[in-house]
Length: 424
Ligand code: LLP
Image (cartoon, rainbow, N blue to C red; front, top):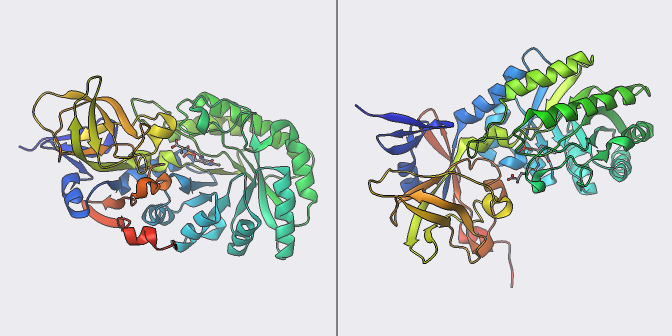
């Protein structure tokens, strides 16, 4: 009888007689067909993640705008567009990507502290739903660009609520010392000013306090502060049609226990209702929690290298493919694709790139030999979208798995792709 054992915390990944499969598709077979490093995503995991938010918003006027910076591959965007999502974008490039897959412009919101005039013009021409403005200076520029285009830009102002999300400092965004948003005590004045600018139409308010948040507390604190402002702003006669509460909900990388999306929203909606704002449209901008644990990166062990202090397991994926350990000292689980009998040794799992920052996992117990395949888990978010060509490495291929079938959604980048834009 065949034994099927789901990986703890990864319901769409299971061992079938020792062999790792995503939604029933063998990672070994995919690696043989497409090579390594290879990103493999479960469509069902993404849809389940979205469904958790939708359960939380049942019966409400709500829009989930997938923060596409987490994974902006066209095949992934298409999954969310077909499921009815909107998109949170942060550049003209991201706008071009979502338009390419046929997303509805009215469901696109545009965040970011440094939008250029050209990007604003591009977004106005596309007819996006809302600009999330991040400074008083940006209000002026957007007003000018909209007037020059003969349009009115719908805006929301991003508020910095000064709440500590208790996450890595590089991904905290709602503290006074961060570059994001308009300070809470400047907000009413900024809204009054925006309401007087003829090229702008005030439609909402937004905030985003950070990423990989694993505790409901900071969200509840931020919500109270935002609702205080909604009251204060509306007291000046400006109506806020929507409240956009950003993204940031964490995922389980290493036994982390973030609240479930529906449970978190049950608590937040109770606060919103209690304050009398339950009739407003709600928007959110989740990224990581929509794709993070949908993905794995399959990589081949090139060499094992015993050392005096440490053993190294050198793999063919590197910090250009999986930048999170190098950038944030992040943990991603690493498991063998095919279980091998024999004693495990402790390894630092590292890539081929020429710097010591190129590590993927430290002190991992693995029974491996060169030629074995490993799967780096939790690789759906902020891996491919942050991948680079450092060391002139081509970016990996990506496969979307669904219902037992697999589709190549990005071919491996060739040397021709890399050289095509350069001259000497
Ligand atoms: N909305 C705004 C305005 C954001 O800045 C972000 C993420 C999101 C939504 C989505 O946040 P999420 O739900 O994914 O936490 N590269 C880092 C994460 C950077 C997050 C930046 N902003 C990492 O790998 O941890």
